[in-house]
Image (cartoon, rainbow, N blue to C red; front, side):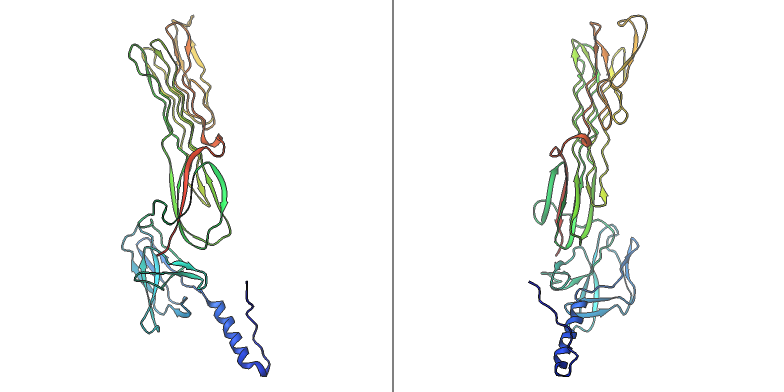
Length: 343
């Protein structure tokens, strides 16, 4: 339910009532006011003369510029307003956590501890959050499968941590002969990360979580002949609003080592399907070069190197894995975790 704030009454019989209504309107308009203009040059935080801030119903103006060296240049700081005992003046100080959003005060206030009932300005410096949160405590969102969605958050300060889908798993090299190495498929295990401290003040926030690249296929074997393993697909990027992890490149196909050494293919776009180039008059006596054995392509891993078996057949290298960009929603992937900050 909403209650009307009645307009002032100019009629003589309602002068007192009119002034009360006028004062109510003035107070309602200034609740949460913050016109200060803090700045961070990387080492020093300053607040110039002239801005005003409302704290618990009192308006304070910045009568003297504030300047403070950051205790740690790489740490993010908020600014807390500390009124004097009689409330006639106030000072600024730096803190590593903001207050909790108070809907009735239209600002962020501490609710416990040394700064109980004191306000933090609507600003945060550059730097990394001190004591980065982990686990379920304070966490308001956590997903780790491919998806695109929009979520609603209460007003206030938050920390978001992103991981991309996994990629960059190189296929294993193969070695010919008895006891030689098998060309194992590349396992997607490298991820990119991104993080941000932000203030939630809009209806919806957009999230996209990227999928893991598919693991590469093992290179086939025939007797003592072994082809190279395929590389994993690319890890898809994860995005929150305007920050992105970027995508993780696909893995390279495994090489074939031996008398006729060949290289596995590079993943990506465009990709070869594993054609071989022959020199000589017959298959078994020719020298050859295998390029991108197995499947590769747009965000796919490189195919493993191909090889001619002792029986004269061609062992095509293991296929490169599919890129996360092409995999369906619900595929295991990166993560997006969001924690509420305050106190």
